[in-house]
Structures are given as structure tokens and as C-alpha cells.
Amino acid sequence: MTYAAGYIPQPQDILRAWMPFKETIGVTKARSEADYQQISATVQALLAEIGDDETHPLADVLDWLSDQMHAYEDENFPIPEAEPREVLRFLMDQHGLKQEDLADCAPQSRVSDILNGRRSVSKEIAKKLARRFSVSADLFL
Image (cartoon, rainbow, N blue to C red; front, side, top):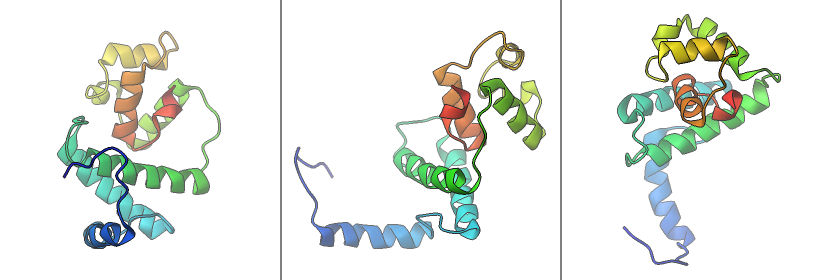
């Protein structure tokens, strides 16, 4: 459905669309650890389906749920300031990954250069790493 510029949906129309969506998703905002875990599982399922296809019809849902997850993380698990390469090293350690395991994000040589401080993280790679680790791309920039 396409709307003309300036169209403002009526609250009743939003409610009719929202309730089935909310019932399907289950949790739409992380208010507790259990909510956070549910959203995280849904994000992982969407990532498996969507991959890097930003034109996928569910990409906006993935972005929205990821934002909900990040808001909960920011409030409950603040990450101290760190160099992007240290953040990457930490996340790799936490997930038991080696440089070559990030081939879906960047070539092994590029990951090595990033970890050794010879190269900064590009916006494109930051987005891929953010999706891979379900974190904000800002951590890598």
C-alpha cells in the first residue's frame, strides 16, 4: 500500500495493523531480560532470513527490533569507551572466533590490519560487523 505525501494514518488504522503484528512478534520492546532474549532470538531469525539484503521487506522490522535491543543494552549493559579494534577483539573472543571466521564481513587480511591498528574500520565493514554481532555500528567507527 502506497500513501500520498502528507498522509497521516488514523489511530484506529494503526491499532488494527499493530495488534496482529504485536501478537506475531511477541515482544515489541525490551523491558526485561526475558524480553531482551526474545527480541534477540527474533533478530537472529530475521538475520538468517534477510542476510545483508537491505531491500528485503523485513529489513525495516529487523532494524526496528535491533534498535529496541540496543536501547536495552545501552541502558543495562553500558560499554566503556574503547578503540574499535579492541571492541572487535573483545567480540571475537566472546564468540570464540578467529579472523577467518569473519569472512562474511571482511577478508582475513583486512581483519588482521584492523586488529593490528594498521587500518581503520570502514562504514561498510562496520555495518557488517554490527549485524554479525548484533551491536551498534558506532562501536566500530
